Length: 108
Length: 113
Image 1: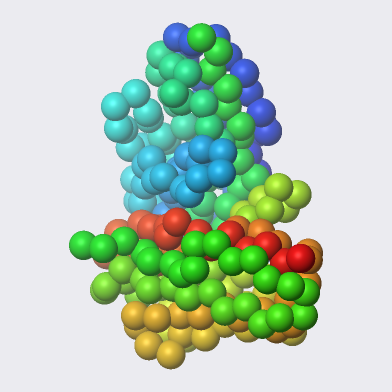
Image 2: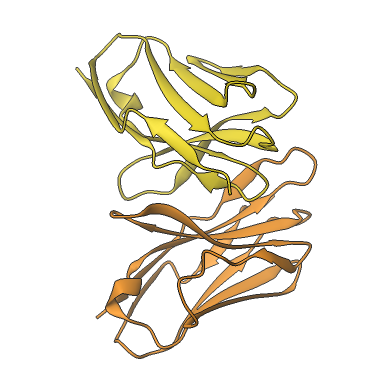
């Protein structure tokens, strides 16, 4: 069974910093990998989808990369803003299992 | 195109009662997933279907939980009898065949007293 780990569990940064969130997985047969954000008490918002054959995807200030050989994906957030504060989750595999998430706080 | 539709959005019930949660996936999507989210355990996969067939139900906590997908446009998650520890937000998601992208419903918040 695929094991998905997200490190760190929580991160607090000042506004304007660039930051990297990590998602590690144990089985390289990932199908696809998708990053979501979740605001407290809310649903899940899709950020980026990286298909198994791709290496990265970009959307605005977000860039996600995928390295199947090392079992790792990173989500890069440029010039962070207080509105980026949320929990960020990765999900992958045929059975779409989630990591535990990284809770990000961006301080004004 | 309408998104994934879940009902009810909120349910409060008493221990021992039967609870039925409903999900309508996006038309044309071939996979459907049920998740449960709690503070302690995060987002847990309960069960998923491909082409209406259950593929992996290893996440279903116990026999009190059951899920069905009688056709491509409807699925139910039933808890009978319900217990206070079942209180959680239950999410349904469907996956687009062509891209593998996952789309979520807004969730059903269940409170069992």
